[in-house]
Amino acid sequence: MMNLSLEALKQQALACRECEAILNPNPVIQISSQAKILIAGQAPGRKADKANKPFADASGDKLRQWMKISNDDFYNENKVAILPMGFCYPGSTKSGDIAPSKVCAPLWRKALLAHLKQVELTIVLGQYARQYHLPSSQLNLTETVKQWQKYAPEQFVLPHPSPRNQYWFKKNPWFEREVIPALQRRVKQVTSDN
Image (cartoon, rainbow, N blue to C red; front, top):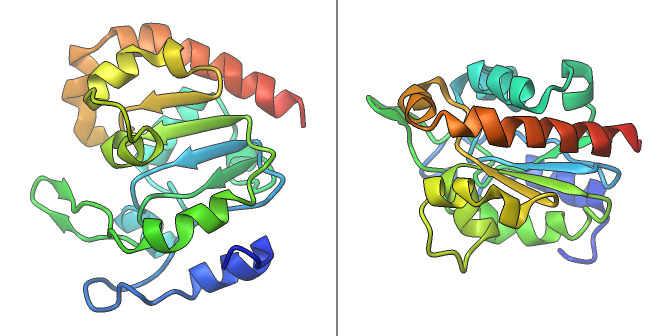
């Protein structure tokens, strides 16, 4: 897989049915070798799955607000790559979406990421993406986000922008006061270089 062009690899990933025994496969990713921002999310939500478009929901609205980026720029694959830990909607329970499938990351992630040589900023959303991108960290998500300056400007580790995280946002007002303005400055810097 490592020798394939990005386009060939992308088409294979979009056609993937490896999780068919446990999910209704519909991979939702956005990727180009020109992208300067990588969003490492968890998995598409129900609305994103139905729209076949990443972050086509309230979480996406919040994320674009945090980034201070237009829909046109966000959905321009030459600017923003969106590569979640699980490519397909995992389903949900009463308390939220099920964890991302563990099939996608080992199968596709390394090969796809190898083509993203222009990335200057990686936005790591949620605990599953944090575990992948910062495997040696012993900190929980909140503590990792508090240490944002340790990873910036190349990475910003953020909580998931889901409306279900309202309690976390209220409990951690420093996040929107300190981290979001720094993230917005970095996004502006990276996208204005295009």
